Image (tube, rainbow, N blue to C red):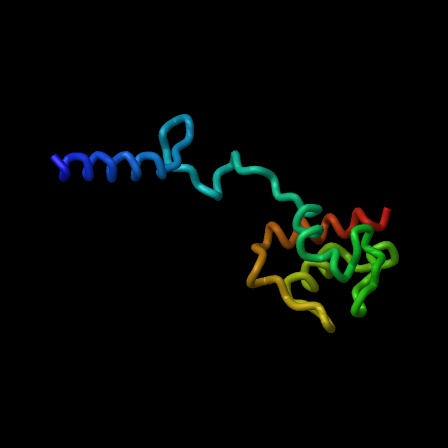
Length: 110
């Protein structure tokens, strides 16, 4: 009897921890229904310490995004590989997240 209860508990635990979509397939983080990437949220978490919430803090030599003339591609390169005292984020963020942050920094100029 104890073995049966243990087996049922184990089966229910496995079932409860599995994630499925409405069609019954396993949910994937690469699915097309995934939430859009928020460049502003990532920026707030990782960049405001030096760049500031409005992009103009310039702490530790950080670029002032209100004055920056860098293109989107150049911003992606800086975020990916770092520059001066800024550390690279290529090991922490994927390409889509880096691009989202770069696009957001361009909005701070407005």
